[in-house]
Image (cartoon, rainbow, N blue to C red; front, side, top):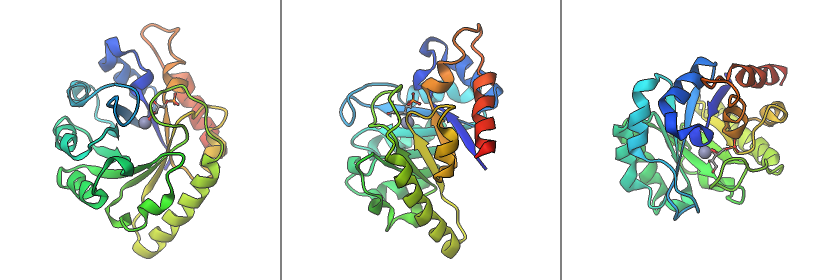
Length: 229
Ligand code: DX5
Ligand code: ZN
């Protein structure tokens, strides 16, 4: 039931295909793909061309996290590039319901992302169109930041809403956490209600001494912590 989604933001960009294969071979579940546009967030990363380039390297779910504004123009490009799941920030879309529908029309699962200061109320009228809720535990824009502790209370609140929704609809929406997730806090984060865990620097920082890079030890440590939760 727990999903570990390493963020390739902290991978070696000069050999991304190899990094994707290594991290999935090490037992990770999804590839988290951070898209930043130097407009919605103050950093610039990777786009649909890179998504298409890594697609042949894995069967794993590619979990695209859009930190871009506007959102809609780029959604079909990511669907064509092989994304399985596309999430966006509600502040970056003029019409959230329409963007969610567009993502599904393109054949992908849809997610809504909440910054640390974004209220959970944004999800209230679109639950039927959501496959995933992503809570940011850092302000978006950079890997390697410190986990914001208030995210734990927000996770508990989101968990309660999503459980209530599951009871009435029979449909389960995943609850993902992104930012500052490490071996030493993942169990506490799971107990607060997350079922899907992005980890960038914690995973890709760990395999750097080996060549080719290997991530078995850190992924196993994250799993062990999750079992204890
Ligand atoms: C931040 C990104 C995160 C980031 C996580 O804007 O959305 O996915 O890569 O990196 P760590 O795990 O290092 O905080
Ligand atoms: Zn992310």
